[in-house]
Image (cartoon, rainbow over all chains, first blue to last red; front, side):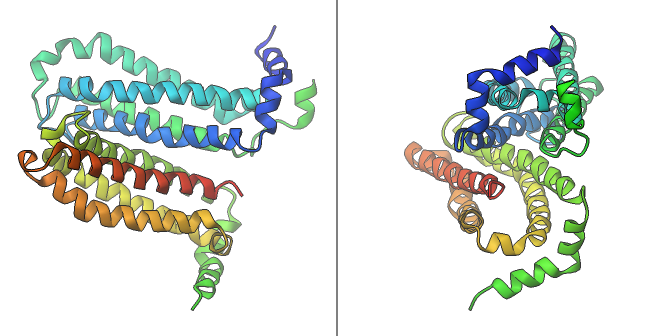
Length: 173
Length: 158
């Protein structure tokens, strides 16, 4: 079964139809998705700014990550669940949307950036934990993270605009 | 006196007309508004979490206030600028939209509260402020900002 066929099947399920046609649930899920941005992306930005040496400079990097990380992760969990629900409400249209595909690509890259930081750069953290301006690799991780998450957020916003949506006939083919 | 004529004037100004005439200008300004939201949200959360005794802890509040201030002020300026542009493109619709007035009232309250009570509490010696007072201030601030954000999102549903 191709991804498109999976999406088409999803779209026919009861939950998807209920969500799609709901008057209140869909806007509420969308609002949760947007407002949780403050929790998830807001705290990610603060952690990245610390890595860049641009804010919270008097607080050790490890402390910023340890204390803000759990809140950020909780925000991420809400983002994933509410985002999955938004996708579930209109799977075919979303799957075919160019901005959705771009968003997923940037999301994957942002995840890779976190993984690289976690498994390599952060290993040496004890040596620069207190530095107002962490070493170049840490600053790079923070800068790349900011750029990628900004791209994720902007693409997410653009999903709502259907400039490049494939013509309806493409859906039935 | 009604502000409707003023709102109508904004909507027909060259800025409002220009944004409406463009296909991509509104989404681009919206994106700026959204990215600034993340930054302002992050700085507001960091300070309020510490007032609540969570996050980086109550003792960090004064330092966090100073650390996040430039980011708060900068993103607020971006929010107001981009928000004003979005406003001009649909001012008359907003005049009749309850959520818009709720948002503006909550925004005014949030800013006054931030500049007075929250500022004083965050900068005070933590030993001279009871934990409950700090928590109440953090909670009220979070609630006010939440109303601003939620009402803002609600403007889009109409």
